[in-house]
Image 1 (spheres, rainbow, N blue to C red):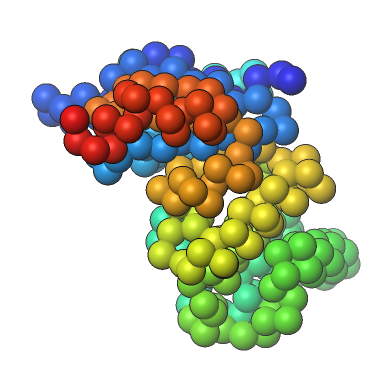
Image 2: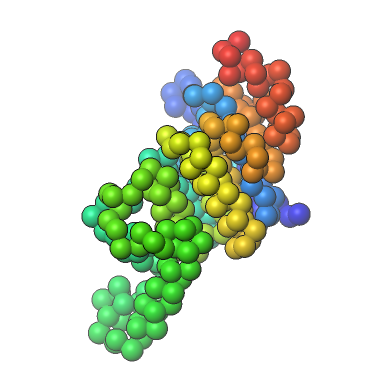
Length: 252
């Protein structure tokens, strides 16, 4: 497998605090990789640096052969590297289908110049709807496509976030606690969807998650962080049973 995302000795400081202290990781093409660690270990800061919300103070981030260190979030997203948030950021007053269509980024009808040439963008609108219906079916949201986002359950909101990322042609998804605050049964369903999307659409996933007992059944590789550093890496059972990881979660 080839390396799709490489993080090399990343450092991010907030005043005297080194939130990331020389973090290095690799995500391989076709892999579901999990990042774990207690609160304050630097997981979300790492995601924010990878996706351009924060600019790292040191180190490099290479995605699909491109140095994306310090690039703007919209530039990184155009390369196919897209993130979701721990708290879903959907448009509450739009339907599920409309939320997906808003995320489609290839509609010339939204351009002032091209909007008057109807024939130029009707085909794109048709393609957008076809793509949205396909994603809705994959995520098993097709039966709620006409419901407002605010009417969805917590688990459905998480899936909608993933669907919006897919509409933007994401190839690698960074998910911040996709199973957070949902019932165990639904959490398993979310991870089952993630695995199916990896297999059917050939996607890559880098996931931050606290539900270790659930995530363990679905991920390929795990990195454990504590105090801004990677303290362990390997297959799920190896990392979860590493004394350094157990000590980090128990607070020493």
